[in-house]
Length: 64
Image 1 (tube, rainbow, N blue to C red):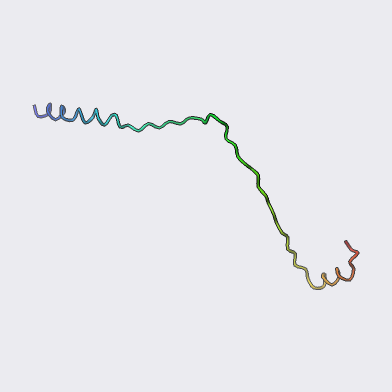
Image 2 (image 1 turned 60 degrees about the vertical axis):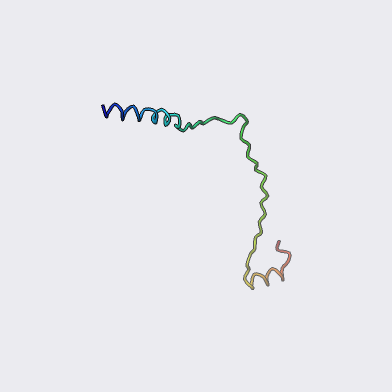
């Protein structure tokens, strides 16, 4: 008899908890995904030159 009362008491709790099951839904978007690739890349190149090469370039400017 006690088992019957225990099961009968737990039954409403189980019914209420069964309504709280989380639902996860995965769906594709209706519009296509666009990625904006407008990227501006700027760079600087710094070159160190030996003093001998620098003097050579100053003396013979017609090399390049």
